[in-house]
Length: 301
Picture (spheres, rainbow, N blue to C red):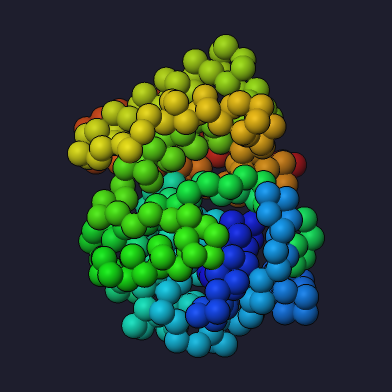
């Protein structure tokens, strides 16, 4: 596991339940790593379990691995994969990160790459302990320019599903990835700028209309690439706004700006703009929200 924060911990702790898997985690948070090594990796909330994960802050300690799963923030993808690439000389590496563009960065360091999209979510409670907020499915498939063999994709999907993380292997994973990207780009950027939870964004008429217009741009960009979305991101947006789903969920980009961290704006709204430019589709709303969030990130005096 490359990055063992909230989402990475969900994957690592589950996989560590398997008798046929040895799970390592690479993360730079020394207190988190120490707690995992001393007490195991604990999940609570939507499920309760403790995973016997071997964690390290030193990538050189990683042994040769059959699979890697990247769950770092997108702006850290390049440095993280370069640090651990030696462990995957004969292995395949999957991304379960937000946005688009991470697989291209992973492919600069390893040969066999898997495109992935995941919906489970969590938050760090304390070092070694992650709150499991919502369950959800994962979809993975070969990354077309530098693909892992389908056999390996299916092997990873099987291990994840057996561990309690339902995962489907598909030949083309772009549809699920772009459906989530389009949904996430609208909810995250508006949340970061307004301070609203996902449910409130959908509840306020003006922000709901803005989100739907932003998603229309994203759908046009996906269509220009020949990507067939597996379902409508607008339907996902409204489903997630239900009080029994994610009404009170703070978008991760809002959590980032509140904590004074950099956001993944370039890999969400920024990627919709960039892919649109490559394929002749303008995305002015997503371009504007990208600029505004970058202004929100700018250090305050």
